[in-house]
Length: 412
Image (cartoon, rainbow, N blue to C red; front, side, top):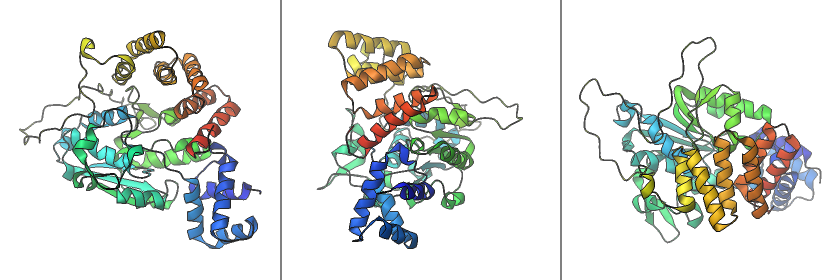
């Protein structure tokens, strides 16, 4: 089967670069839909696509496989609460805080945004979270809002006790979390986003890597237009270089992947330095403000003194989240000496080296992680990004295809 026409159609419809997931994934999706439509061959299905917008949506659904969980990349959510906390008007509910999650997948990300801000003391009535995705199936699951074990990962699940109720099918977020979130079907690259308002915060994570460079440029131009002048854009760990290429300025918060628009051409205004990740910077109000509601327990606890910090890999990860990169690296290395090789530790050490600007050593750590665990998705994606930065496009695409096969459930 020649899938090239279908790949081009998907690129036009949703921006997908078929090389990022592999032609086999597209072929499998076409065969699945061809059988569902009870058509004799690919030509007949191609003709059906030309006359049926609903069937094109079904093909899109067949290539989109959601992979997300609550508080994925937790440092991003910790940074969110602190960065927007600079504006006292927002924290006191004097003006709405508008956020966009695109693509929102099955809802874990927008609900995580709501929980992070509620924990930080933001009033629920002031939160407006638009959650947009191209997949109707994903949106239906998000609005149903019943989540199983795969949506709750990691060792710190205290948020589930605070914000979820157990049901026969899983766990469902409480109304306080669901109320600020508004789901809608949409495409980052089409005219639907032209109607959108400007946002204080945009989360657009782990989707740009599935576009070719021209489509990435288009998508980033849309994001830049949707972001308020002093708003924050959060991307995935493998997409940070793209933002720098487009004039965005990093918040320089380790493992947060947050960016602000740079000054306009010809402007002499210097960007304001980002605050410390763990110490919100707020000016005292000119007049007495109404008392704030008590904040819930924090998603990321205030850092303890080194003697009280956890030990082992958890301690290394916490140090990295706090920006203590040298200490985090030292703990990773000590863990390796004491316990032997570990894909998880090599990957974390690679992230730390990457954040420190040591790309060569970061690549070596990612390779070690992949030697031990060939299907380590995050190590594949991060190493692909480093290869692309060094001009090894063929090597980067090979790794991305491996990662995409894992994403689609096909193995490495």
